[in-house]
Image (cartoon, rainbow, N blue to C red; front, side):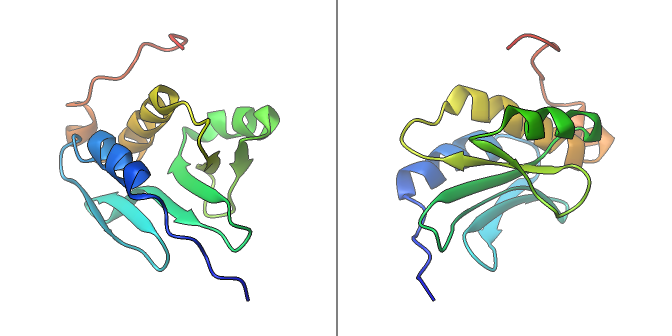
Amino acid sequence: MTARPDVPDEWIDRLAGILEAFPECVADRAWVGTRWRVRGATVAHVFGGEDQQFRLIFRAEPGEVPAFENLGDPYFRVDWGESTVGILVDEHTDWDEVAELLTDSYCVQAPASLAELVERPPAGAS
C-alpha cells in the first residue's frame, strides 16, 4: 500500500483561515487528514490520497451537486451523502473559489442560527 502524503502546512493554514472564521467551526484530526466541523457536522475535510493527490471534501446544496459532477476535473462526486462533493487541490487551486465553496458548505452544515451570521456571496456572483 502506498503511503498517503501529508497535506502541506500552507494549505492547512489557508483552509483554517477560511473555516475557523465561521462561528463554532473547529478543526480536528480525521481518520486521515484534517477536518473542520460545526456542532459535530463536517464542513470540510482535506487529505492526501494513496494516488498522491490532495482532496478537499465539502458540502453543496443538494441541487448543485449535479453541476459539480458535470464540471469534471478538478471537481468530483463523493458517495458520503447526497450533498457531498470534492475538489482536487494542487498548486493551481483558486483559493478565492475555495473560500466561496467552503462558505456555502458551512451554511449547508451549520444550524440556521449560525449560518445566518455568515455573509454569503450573492447567487450567480462568481
